[in-house]
Length: 172
Ligand code: 5GP
Image 1 (tube, rainbow, N blue to C red):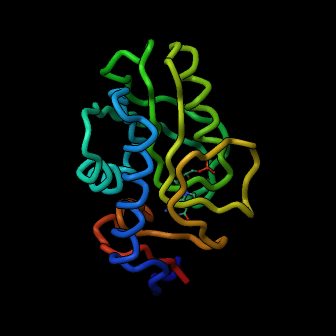
Image 2 (image 1 turned 45 degrees about the vertical axis):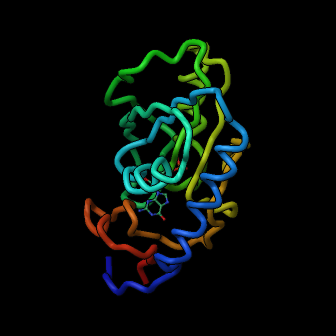
């Protein structure tokens, strides 16, 4: 894959949007002590920035999912690679994703979570590509709608690389 990177969303814009999402989450959850579950690895920077802007009690957990497919596309065959540490039953859970493309990964995970009987499940995604959606997964908090390009940076990788870029870029 060629590695010419172009900036799609600048770090200052990301920062503003993350603050806006944090305010919306704070407003909606008030004293509900939500459990935020980040899907690794792509959500780690987004989640770290998001929780530091939310001024109320909350807890954080992570899960690793694998999706078998090509390097740039999810196949819909998803496997849970790590277990959750925090009990989910009766909790208000907010799933935090870096990118929703076809939506297959997230739809699978939400189904998996609901079997554990949480009080509620909502979804927060930094980016989404609506043109590629294959499921009707509902995104409750959405940062940016992005075009059908392969994006990297701000935690999102290509082949394990580029997670440390401060801006969200796309590969030409
Ligand atoms: P979905 O199941 O929604 O199709 O895919 C979600 C996963 O596919 C993301 O978490 C990510 O790992 C990968 N993915 C989809 N689009 C992109 C993209 O533009 N860039 C990167 N780096 N990964 C992507």
